[in-house]
Image (cartoon, rainbow, N blue to C red; front, side, top):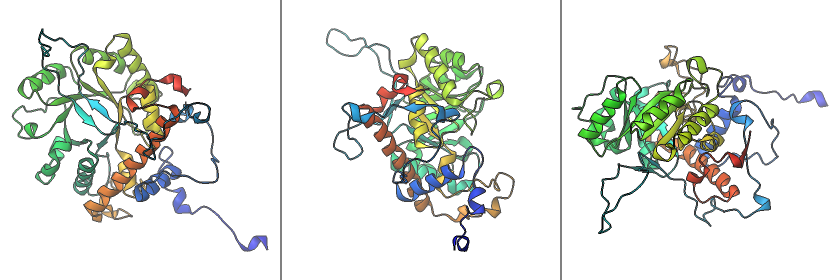
Length: 372
């Protein structure tokens, strides 16, 4: 009889996440972190074909009608590396062919993803160890607050970028000679602070975190003109602008900032990173299409560790984590993050291959390969 078997969604599944980090996103993230594979249903796509934010942007995947590159299977090489740092607009050589100036330091990352500590999570100390270990394995950088960089993380110091709030930077900080990059929060004196760091530590890459409000495009241009090499455009955890830009999506903030830099002929001089609301692999590619060089991932790292976003830890109930994340071994947690980023990288290779592109740098700002 038809009534004998009844199927319904598990109520616990419905309670996962929130309106942005939906149960579907969390489930896909768990699968990728567990297997390192791309989530494929095998039964066709049954969801909507358009929506808000990143879902309003389609990427060009018409691989059937023109030559493509098969990068995901290793038959053809596709580069996903990006450079962090200031790029000189031109080179000057002497009569012997020697460069007449010392080029600014550059940090090459093998993929356009930087890791950052999420704003929540049970046992932050263990979480930082996991993120630092994953960054070391992936060859990327992990953003951690300066006060959170404890002695037990020093083995991974080259892969850490300590964050300094406004007015909190000490040039005599013993950590500065041990790292390759730091992040400064934007404030009125940040340019002079940046110059002081460069003078004292010429090999150190300084990037500046700019809040994604309506003034962000002009502020980014001003910082780039003043010599900033890496600028981070920060949105909320749901990919919305800050303050009066609360109705503006991250992709639009990136686009406005990118075009403003192009208008002032500064785009190729700086590295633009986007953060906030990057929840899926497709968001990485779409952010780059809109004009970013790379992205910063935070909450997806938490989801990769099987977090349900119950937010008990954020509400002062960190000792009641339903999955006991505070007991997760560092090695296992780091491997799950590596698996997730690897799955994201494979999906980026799929998009680049379908577009026939040789490297992710060519995808930056390439809106002709997308439909809005």
